[in-house]
Each structure stands twice: as structure tokens, then as C-alpha cells.
Amino acid sequence: MADTGMPGGLASAGSRPAMAAFLSLGFRPLYMAGCAWALISIAVWIFAPSLVRPPMWGLAWHAHEMLWGFIATIAVGFLFTASNAWTGINPLKGGWLGMLCLLWLLARAGYLVGGELAFWLAMACETAFFMLASLCVLRVVVKKHSTRNYGLPMLLAGLCAANVLYLLAARQGNYVSLMHYFEQGLLCMAVIALLIARRVIPFFSMRMVPGLQIPMLAGSGKAQMVLGVAAIAASLAGLRWPAALALAATGIIALWQLARWKPLSVLHKPMLWILYLGYVSLAVGLIWAAVYTAGLTSGPLSRAATHVHIIGVGGFSVLIIGMVTRTALGHLGRPLALDRSMLASYYLMIAAAVLRLAALWPSTASLGVLHAAALCWMASMALYLWRFVPMLIRPRPDAQLHRPAVATQRVAPVVRPGA
Image (cartoon, rainbow, N blue to C red; front, side, top):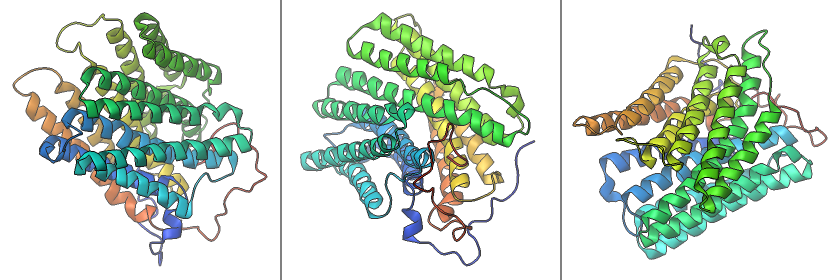
């Protein structure tokens, strides 16, 4: 049976939107911006691609906006909020957080406006966005000597570097280089997603299922990170087989972890099984990427688009719809329960992933299936925004009782509630 119930209403009685609350933690503006852009950019790509103007071009713009404009933006919002929970220090808030969001917005607008000046300004703003985000996370983890989190700001910096190289390739119209750098960005994001999900899935599961005990698997998590970075390095060096072996090992470890997390125990909790489903899709996508990298694929699906969409839509996006629901409810002081619209957004995202993968198979129905996938995706994002924006722009219902983590708090061994 699914979780039901309204999570505390759209806003507590007498609560009004407040800029101070909206800019108090990174997830508030960045979850809203990222999900809104996910809806808008897919609508543009599928139904109005002529709006994309040079020097950006259709496929280059679409791939960029999905990975860096949507997925990486949500990751930054989560890392700002989680690092606050891990260290007791808020990486960015108030006017500085507002400035970061403005940089993000200018980048989105610049790539669409077209023209050399707008492109370079957008690239500068986006580079500043990711570098500032990386430095903010680095500052708090170093200040609290949170050594196990030192890799996160480095991965964000890697994501930023891949973005710059991708954009330069897009401007030159170099498809081969474009896809090469996109793969590097995708792998950086995959390592970040694996690291985050490996921590939060067991923690969330044990909190929501009474009596459930599952291992955190920190050792295999370290191995995943090493192998993921090795895959990125091997790919950059053009070492096809070492990259494929590292990718395969990373995905197999993820499947082994999932089996250890007792997936059958969470089938009655949609807020949990959506995360399990995203994690297994990410693992399968990495294994498929390994097969593709090794040159062992054949037939209609023997192209990069297959593993890119398994990882991007089946993995990242399914994980995201679960995470932006669970973490937002936790940090907004709401009951951890789904209402019908939230549950519908889960099913719509799953449908979007299935239909998008189905559309990769060449047939006369491919275009119609692609449009259906886009509509399901847009509906999922729209439902999330409709339900959560009124909460994200208001103070917590328990705002007077809630206090930020004190400076003397030590680094927690696991993510705190709501992280």
C-alpha cells in the first residue's frame, strides 16, 4: 500500500512567502529552478526546437541543458543542504545564494538568446555558478575536517571543467569532441549520484521501515568512487578497455549494494522504492556504457543514446523525483508522507523513462512515443512544482521552534534527517 496523506498542507496557517526563508537553504531555489527548467527545456526541445539559436544547436543544447542545466543544478541544491547537515555549516544563503541563482538564470537565458556575446556571457555565468558551488562545499567540509566528503567539491569542479570543454566543442560544431566531453560530465555526475544515493538510501530506509537494518557499505562506496574516477581518467586518455572495465565494475558494485539493501522490504513505501529503482537503473546504465565503450554492442541500440538515456532518464531523473520530494519534505518540517499528486509524479517520471527508452527503437511509432515521453516528463515536473513551490517559498511551519545546527556540532557518520 502506498503512503497517503497530505504533508501538512501547502502552508501553515497565516504563513506567507518570505525571501529570507526562500534563500535560507540551497535546495529551496535550486530544486524549484531545476525542476521548472526540466519542464521548459523539454517542451522547447520536443515541441519548439526552432527557439534554440546559434552558436548552440539542437542536440548540443538539449544534452547540455539536461545534464548541466537540470541534473547538476539539483545536485548542487542537494549538496548545499546535505553539507549543512553533515557539518553544521550552511555553505551559502541569503544574498549570495540569490546571486548564485541569478548566474544560473543568466546562463539559461544566454544559450537560448543566441549570438556570440550572449553565448560567452552564459558560459562565464555558468562556469562561475559551478566553481562558486564547488568552493562553498569545499569550504565547509575542510573547515569541519569532513575528509570523507573532500571528493564532492572536486567532482563538482570536474563537472565544471567538462562543461567548459563541452561548450567550446558545441560552438565549433565538433560532434565527436562534444560527445566525448558529454561522457566525462555524465560520468562525473554518475559518481556524485552513486556517492549520495549510497549514503541516503540505507539511512532513509531504516528511518521509514520499523525494524529494518541494512548496511551502509562504506567500503564498497569508496571502491565505487575510485573506480568511477578511474573510468573518467581512462576515458580522457582514450583507454577504451580500462574505461569499460572500470564502468562495469562500478555498475556491478551498485547492483550488489542494492541486493544488500533488502529491496523487497520497501515495496510498500513509494518514497523508498523510487530511489531503489533509480539506483538500479543507474547501475544498469553504467554496465551498458561499459559494453558500448568496449565496442561489444550491435543492432539498433548500439549507440551512445542508449546508455545515456538509461543513466540520465532511468537513473538520474527517477532518483531526482524521489530525492526532491523526500529531502524537501524533511527540511521543510513536513510529515514524510505522499499525497496523490506526489505519487502521480513518480509514476509519470517512470512512464517518461520507459517511453523514452522505447522511442530509441527505430519504428514508425518512435516519434509518437517520444512525444508521449515528453508529455509524461512535463506532467511529472509540473505536479512537483504545483505541490512544492508554495512550500519552498514559505517558512517552515515550525520556524519559531526550528534552529540551525550549532557550530560545535560534529560531523555525523550518516546523513541527518531530511538531508
